[in-house]
Amino acid sequence: MRDKYNAEENDLTDEIIKNLEYLGIEYLVPIGGDDTLSYGLRLHKAGVRCVGIPKTMDNDVPGTDYCIGFSTCVTRTIEFTHQLRTCAGSHERILVIEVMGRYAGYTALVPAMAGASDRCVIPEFEFDIERLTELLVKDRRDNESNYSVVLISEGAMFKGADMIFSNQETDAYGHKKLGGIGDMVSAEIAARAPKYNNGETIHTINQRMSYMTRSGQPDAIDSIVPMAYGNLAMDLIMEGKSGRMVCLKNGRYDHVPFEVVTEYEN
Amino acid sequence: MSTKIKGTIAILTGGGDVPGLNPAIRAATIRANRNGYRVVGLRNGWEGIMKIDRTKPLEEQEYCQILTEKNVQKIARTGGTFLHTSRTKPSKVSKIKSLKICVTNIMQKKMI
Image (cartoon, rainbow over all chains, first blue to last red; front, side, top):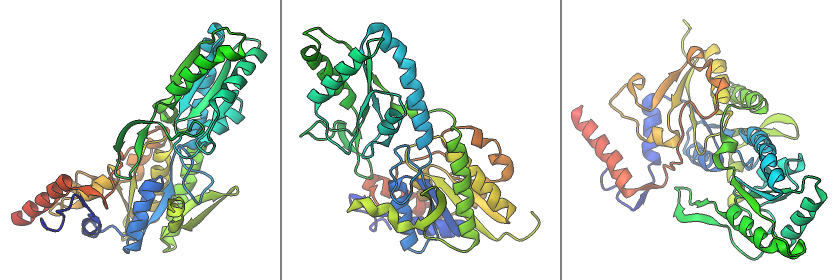
């Protein structure tokens, strides 16, 4: 055994299967994002009966329209953004808020569409900092209270540049820790604003939402949907089905083959 | 539940925590229990199932917890995950950590 796992990186899947057998576990219900579920798929392929439940505040698990945690994230983002308006308004600033969201922009886009901010930038589209500054200065001018608000996804990218990482370390799934884009956007806006404001300086408020958006108790949607997902997973198990992921698709609860979780990997 | 257990279902949570995990654990547990299944919560995501001690019964495992209607009833009100979580990927475990797990297993075997 000592020789078996002697490489720099080892696959302990055989041990996991032995452990599950030892405990007499017949069905496994992993609740997680595409990383957690992709390993569930690995076990499913090795013969472990699995039913997955999708969870990410980014709402980006393939095969479902809803992932547990997304609604509360939007609720918190709207709530905290509105709270910060008093500070931005009093000082007549441009409020720059960084929210979590690695590859999917829903956590910035949905609150922005719901009126939490004037603008947002998301990972799906590279943004032009010059144009963004121009728009935010205009939004500020159009606002009676003389301030404007922009939400920045942590995975957003300046036109022609890469993602901004806080350091180069990666986790077991190969992801580097994101962070810092809000600071950069905030500084760039402050530097460019006078050009669109008759030479006058505009200060920014730079706030990273970070863990605040995933904090606290679940909102209504994140109390109702998980209840349904948990029951749906049990329905499948009781019917003797496995290798499925429960989902919400086109407004209906359903389930899809577990393989969907790796859909974005290629 | 006096009737025979129909099967054992394990639940785990992995990755970043979000509000809504506990309501899912609660609903699944209650539904399964009422239908005659035993439910085990595996703690710390994939990390927990990697660290099972194969000399101890399930009830004494550090990373297992029997879930019942009684002990999950109140958790749906709270955010985070009652079972804790990790970003561990068991198909990609460092040399040091693998050795640690193996050595523990070897020692356990000698003890039997």
